[in-house]
Image (tube, rainbow, N blue to C red; front, side):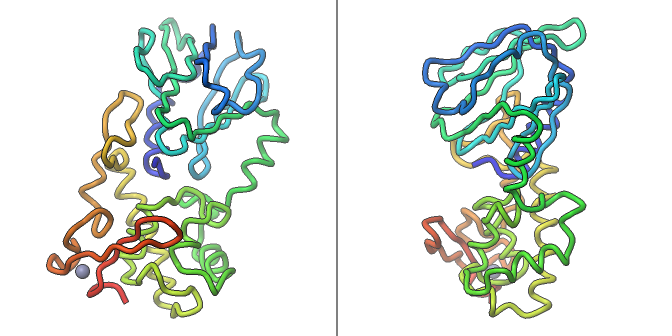
Amino acid sequence: MPELPEVQTIRDQLSAYMPLKISSLKLSEVAESIVHTPLVKLRGQVIERIWRKGKMLVFEISDGRKILSHLGMTGSWRISSTPLKEKHNHIQIKGKCGDEVFYLSYVDPRRFGHLYLYGEEDAQKKLAELGADLKSSEFTFDYFKSALVKYPERFIKVSLLDQSLFAGTGNYIANEICARAYVRPDRKIKSLKGPEIVALYHAVDVVVSGATESGGTTFQGGYADVNGDRGKGVQHLVVFYQKICQMCAVTPVKKITLAQRGTYYCPKCQK
Ligand SMILES: [Zn+2]
């Protein structure tokens, strides 16, 4: 599933093709399971720029409206100079950047992604459901600590996955944050000591920055960037999908299920 580093990579790559003046829009026959609002009056409008909050991409339209795009499990945006020949292409925006024609295509084999076209107020409301973005200036230590201790009875990893607290996390990031902080993901939040909370906060940056600099992380058959290429972030993983812990290099990684998600930790390194 695309998490913050993957969504950021797509944002950065798409931004090179903005502003894009929309000349046509085409939806697949099953696009209505992804597109939740009618995509009206977009022809002739310009996508001015794209930014991101958590895992939500925000396309700013010249008339003040915004397209909000969440990639779900398997969604991605592709850029091409000819119409993309791909089976699961559900939204195709043809447009012009400068004098060149580009096709901006939303590809999503499993169709768990979501797309909305909203006016300013509704867009703000939707984005306000998300907590502080892990890469934003709002994401301070004080913010992190108060958001984390809000639910003391929860397992650490469960709160780390909560988008209303920490926008941009996902399963691999949450596992890796716990590993880099040397704490087990299945501990209760109320058991954390002060230095462990500090370690978790610093681990967020290590994990998110490492993966973003590698162009995101691709697992089997998953995420691809705007050119259809895979990210190289796998090299940074220390416990997630690993047989041996990459921190101590000797201990077999333990896999458990926590809140229905595969959860990995090193029984030696993580307390
Ligand atoms: Zn270890």
